[in-house]
Every structure is written in structure tokens, then in C-alpha cells.
Length: 295
Image 1 (cartoon, rainbow, N blue to C red):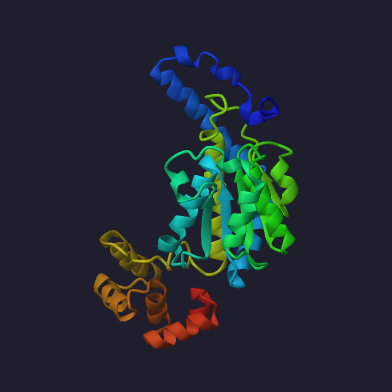
Image 2 (cartoon, rainbow, N blue to C red):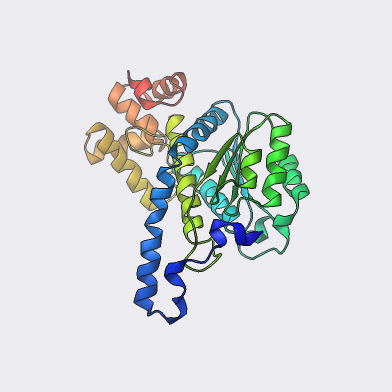
């Protein structure tokens, strides 16, 4: 039934794609890509409650779990992998699972997405519990692997969400919070790594970023829980301290070291004029929110 999916329809603007100049191909792709944020805008009311569930999961020692096959699965793994360095989360907090396992991230694993049992088995292996929120990703909206995982999550009382790029998607039937981004036909027929993939990437960015802001991982618009694991991030950390507090470079650098390279603690130390130990106590009491720790 692929021919009935909007993502599989032929795009009338690109039926002569093979006869276009390189610039014409680039222009039509760019014009089609511009429609993606507009499509997402219509789904913001559906995205918001799923973000709230993600916030609740993290607050209650649960996990945000993305899973999918192919491009969708890779995008989930990518977003999950970027959370620890950006937000200082443990790798177990935001988890990305792809049908077929790690090898499927770099090469196609034929048939991996066709088993509902495989989706369930991967959730069992993760020791899924009711505090977790499982978000299934499928551009087509019909991937059996995703359906199996969502069914199992619901059976144990876990919260479920889905991101598809077709209306009335099958995976939506198994999600407490279904999201459907109507991206339409692709420039290259059926290649959902294009507009559909872009839409999923943007929505995943929204979910993880908004959820982490919601649990205190930002101060103003600064990523104050960043892990300074290289020279660039160390420099960025010091600059954040300067921007958040108005101190000079030397004070920022000194406090950064006194705070054991913990940006959030350094900011509290300066703004509240307290020791590192007191800053940590205040942050714990404020559930990680800098504004609460300095008030």
C-alpha cells in the first residue's frame, strides 16, 4: 500500500529531475525544504504534550527512548548521542535504538524493520519501565518494528509518542501522543531521508532541547550543563560564565576551575557569592535550576 502514502507520491515539480541542471536541482530541493518548518508549525500542539511527558520522565528517573529503522532510527540515535555533551546527561537518560542494532547505523540491515517481535525484544532488553517515555519514529508511519515496541511500552504502562510524516499513520494508533508532520512528496520519489528526515530531525531537536530546558539544563539561553571535554568546549564554558555574570576573563577562568569545571556551579558561586560546596547544595535544592539557586 506504499502508493497510498503521501511520502511515496511523485512530486509534480520534479518529474523532469534527471533533465535539470545542477543549479535547478539545488533550487527545487531548497524550495521544497522550505515547506518543512511550515508543516511542523501545524503540529506544535501535538509536540507540546509529548515534551511534557519527556520532562516528567527525566524528573522521575525515567528515560526518553527513541527508536526506529533506517533513516528514522539513525536520527534518533544521533539526537540521543548529542544529549550528554550538550546537557551533561548520563548516556542512559536519552537513548536511541535502531532496528538491526549498532551495525544498522552505518549500513542497511535488510528486513530489520519488518518484525514486531524485534521491537518488543529490544524494549525488554532495555528493561523498559513505566517511568520511561518511548518515541517511535517512522516516516512512513507503518514500520512493524516500531509498532511492536510501542505496543510493549503501552502494555507495561509506559508513555508512548510517535513521529510520522503521513496522515492517519498506523503507528499513531499505538501512541499516547502521536505527531504527524505532513511533509508530502519528496523531490526524489520515496527518498524520505529528504523532507521527511529533515522534519524528524527538527522535531527531535525540539523534544530533547525543550525537555532539557524544562529540567533545568539551561540558564537564560546558555547550555550551562555542557561537558567541557575539549578545548572548544572549555573556551565556550568560560565565555558562558562571563555572559551570565558579567565578570572578567580571569575571574571566569578562576571560578571555572574552583567549580571543578562545572559551569552551572561557577555561575551560582559568582551570582550568589557562595562557595562551590554551597553552590552545589543550592542547585540540588533548586532541582538544578540556576535561577532557583541564586534567588
